[in-house]
Image 1 (tube, helix red, strand yellow):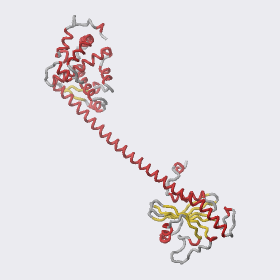
Image 2 (cartoon, one colour):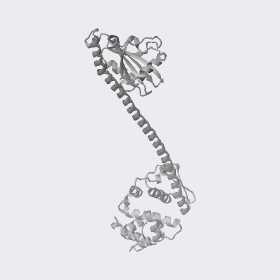
Image 3 (cartoon, one colour):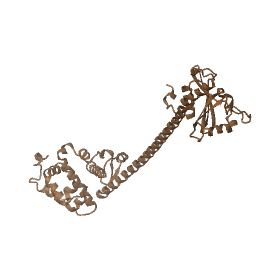
Image 4 (cartoon, one colour):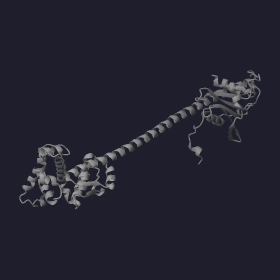
Length: 393
């Protein structure tokens, strides 16, 4: 397919487009000459077009327009939209010094119709010279009667001048609309590029903040447990990709520390790596609890969440070296609550809490050993064993 066939028909200089349009639409012409201001060269340019054997050809005018700039500018400055000329007295053919003048009474010889139309680049008018057949054969007349020729020219003026002027205006309007649209697209592209850059910078800052935050959380537990935890490079990459709330994020780090404590039997003073396998990055807090909870604990998930939150709050209280009371734990709870809410939660989940504490002795060490209200729940178990297993869930 011809690439030109896939572009807008109004792409190009409006004057050159009008020349092609006139060759297609105006009947009874031998050729059309165009003189227009071209902003790309900042000068007057000329082209000539004709139809030979039904083929349209357009080529340079072949006239030194610079030598006739004075006469041409006079024509471009005139107010009238059209004018008839003799072939021999065209402003770009005659010398400005030859003294020839137009004979307004020689109607038969005036067979060149000049149409002036605005050029929006320099504010003047471009010139379209249409050379009609002297004998007007296309109009079914023969040369001779001047009165008929004048009447016929009036018909030609009314038929073509307004059409050409409107077409020229449409070309300019379409180009202006396209230019505005292109500018909008360009501005949108720049805006999108700017936003993408800002998003990339924001993502990079967020990744750095996440890594720093993870280190700060881990440092608390280094101090609390007096152990040398560190994130592997894989874990750091995993942390930088985290999406979710900070509360979720903190719980993930805490869970990782607990898993390392429970799974790594090494010298407590040795470096303890936390790799990406210890880090869970669910899309929500509920998803995190499901991933961190063994399958057999699913039925106790509400109690598990309750204990997890109490454990994290208790660790926070102890890190601040405060007494592990219900009031202090309630204030350190991820969602600040009142002390009675803790008592109510433990009574409501007491059977499940006993089941979980008995079956998962490695979990919730802080509240299991040091939080008196929870210890009371365990101690009140009649046989302090597994009798409630069958009722759990």
